[in-house]
Image 1 (spheres, rainbow, N blue to C red):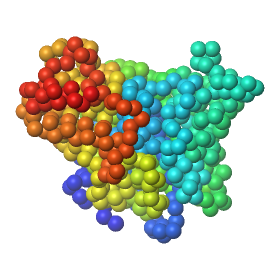
Image 2 (image 1 turned 45 degrees about the vertical axis):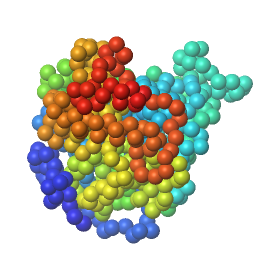
Image 3 (image 1 turned 60 degrees about the vertical axis):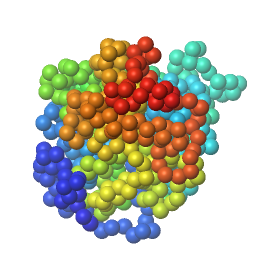
Image 4 (image 1 turned 90 degrees about the horizontal axis):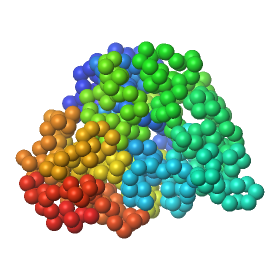
Length: 521
């Protein structure tokens, strides 16, 4: 197997390579096992943290990360760390939709922001998910953690839906007719989103109310119990663990309080990293370690609720060398930790700099399980399996589309990144409303030379702006960004330009005329 370590195309930044090299020999001896036969299907565990920044993981940013993350670091030493992995959005709900469906969330009714529960599920009942897909492929499927894709709560006696206005917290006993169990999962234990975290759900019913500080230990315990329950069962399993941490409420357990020396956020990150350690220990104890593909990642960048400035003053940069944070179009909003261990398939201590997105999980699992993609599914998904083997991804997609909290679009193709926004498109200053009307309506960055997105090249490269804008428009209007028959978006019009009308200006200087912009609405 060719190691990415030896390829210039995939060479890690110097500090990350050195960090991983220190652990390479031990990891190689302990975890590189003979390849499984083609008939064997791996167990799959996808641990997705909530608001964990790229710079929060020490091995990814050893010079600027001051929070110990020993289990994520160990995972990287035993597998592959991606340095250019992205979520489909810079906030929670859209990322989760894209992950489970292989389709960008802005193709649905959700054009900006997140959902808040007490509403019909955002995933259409007829749309395949990775859970329903793997279930048909012979997997047992489970989700332990945060759903955040809407579902309804029904009164068990009247079958009438409770409303958020009348029920701040879903009542114990409420039934859920359109949750994870109805979207391909065999088992669900967790909650909907942060504001309803005290309502604990199992399968399709609210089973109890519990203090929010107990949720992370609960998810840890339930994940370990689930892995133990699969012992002796030859059927492979898919375990999706979307944690609610280190998202607010930032509530580290007493045993973790004060551990980081950086305040509650640092403590909560350490406790979140420990979940990965507990899962790894459970796999080892139950004989599942060597036939399990384990992925550790996040849903978007770090939130400002972590007190980013205070952390920076103490030497910890949540986004490392990237600009921005959660909700933004700049890479700090959506470039993520993405670490993969798959003994015998992924060489230990390797690093990959190829561009991937959470939406790519669906196509990757189809290739891993040797199953065709379902018709009408995964329109924005490309398999990253070749990258795990040290090869170039064969993409039918021209680029990756980024989306911010406020619905602003960006397009990344190769080294070029085009933003249809004057500012961050999110919560970092300068926000859209803070920019003068004379500011350029687009930003263009060469990510190979300016990863910090400081030098806007839109005036110097009008041809590139036009090409990326045209491709973005095509990908939106085609209902898909991969090759295949055109699909249909769930809504008739998707507005590419979210900047308020009073602040828009002609783009003639950048080579994108005002009429072209008008036609992309």
